[in-house]
Length: 145
Image 1 (tube, helix red, strand yellow):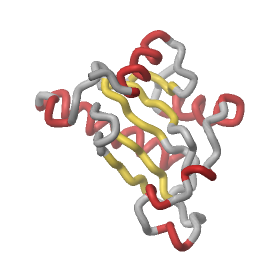
Image 2 (image 1 turned 135 degrees about the vertical axis):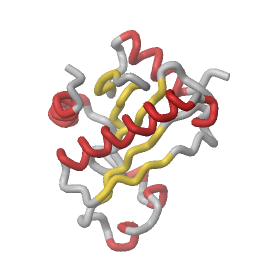
Image 3 (image 1 turned 180 degrees about the vertical axis):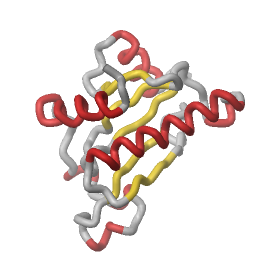
Image 4 (image 1 turned 60 degrees about the vertical axis):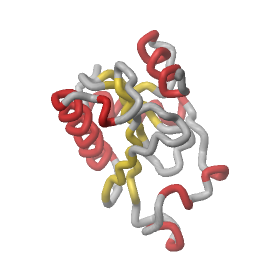
């Protein structure tokens, strides 16, 4: 069943996905939309699979390792305290990993709560001009030039 994840990976492959940071061995790093917290990214597998358990051992190791490498890079580029990693797949039944930097500056009532309790409607939408410097810095940090 084609999902938004399938379309985003096709757009990354075609070089037409504005939020694409770059291609790693296991998949594509893309900026999240909206930017619920600064530096929110996703790792989309290429090829797309339904869930983590659909990958063989080597593919799982690659995807999960690269997910943490992206997290390390986000931590280095932001003032985040930690990265929250989430793989859900309930609405979009295709593997994708959310990488949410978490900050001391988040409002107290949501700082320690799941990111989904933030006001997503109030979050800034992806903006190619505003987010270009972060995308470039993340590309450089991940050697995806």
